[in-house]
Length: 250
Image (cartoon, rainbow, N blue to C red; front, side, top):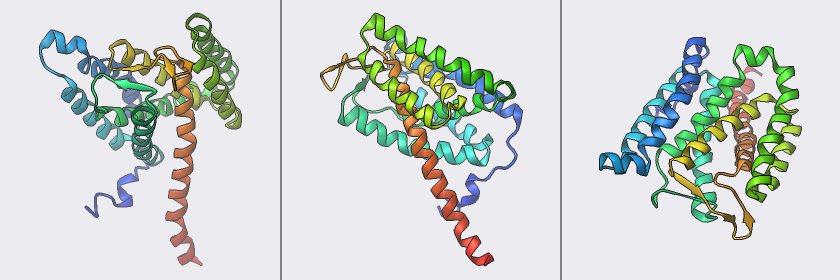
């Protein structure tokens, strides 16, 4: 157990471009497959609950993704699993903002949150995204304003109207880093599929008073906010690891 939690577990200074490219494609391919396995559609067609298959497939992919990721991304997705599970307990179990097809939170969900985050990170660090960073910082805000306005205007999604403001406030603080837009695209992708397969459902009125679509596009705010927490925790983590070395060097 001591070796398993060793700091060496998080060190990989040579992630390959090929593996990162494959991870980007696998996210797009495996997400609908996992959610289909956990759907009523699968249950009704095949006569058994496919959630254990969804959990197993997600776990295998998560372990592979962790293995091929670089040091920074390993720390980020490891931390994301913990933070996302706490978030599920708060937003789903405690506040009841949405609920899953069954009573229990599926195992693939906290792992999936980390995979969504990692996928956005991978897309934001592709050669194309890096080379077009200036263009993306100009076009993404306009695109997301449109994405937010559609459910607000056509589905009375006041939830999105409220939380998109906080989303842009975080982006302003982060100088409109395209990373957050890529993560948001991944969130929208998985939310549309998850609610489409009825794996989970957002309540029509959050806290009983705020009208929300299913899904509300404003949900991207919680990932952006989660990133701020995760980045801070990882920086503290790195700082604590560097302190002993710095002291001994003195």
